Length: 254
Image (cartoon, rainbow, N blue to C red; front, side, top):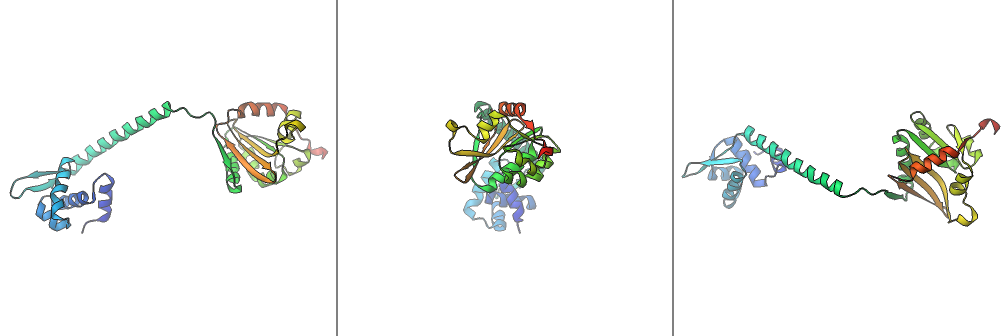
């Protein structure tokens, strides 16, 4: 009985169902005629010669003698060393072609993703807090976000520099770490737009990691939407401006 798992492996290197069966039988018998192979595999007689010819052309088997012609497998070690070399050569060629596509196709300067569900927003925020390598800047105007991600922010602060900037000083009581308030530019541009700049959106959270990626949570008529951008070409400039302007909140004066 032919081992199905062995057939599966042989098909994985490009053999057809019939080719795999014939090759396994020949590997076991070492030498056999077309009729004997037909009797062992139950492959239709009309397909036996076609299959044997195909295996011979691929270099898996050889034939000898006449009346009847007998078939035997090529040395297994030799055959599979050749297959490995051909496979490596093929993969290397594929790699070179794909690398060429990478260099020919410029990476977009910025790539943005809309995060419409709470689950996607929540997971992206937590992943950003975990994967930051040097710096995190959080601008938050909602105590719900501060308390919800308090433990994640605390853990991040043990690894990297974290600036937690709150929109109102009273939010400092919910902060798990030292927090800051912004200057007039941050207040007017991000938290509370000036009269002529109002566009119906209000920012609840802005998270920037390593001055390279950003995530904004915006509220529009009671509905929250997240915008994740990576790489964010403006994150470095905005991060510098925020760090220059913020002032620490003195919790002792609450």
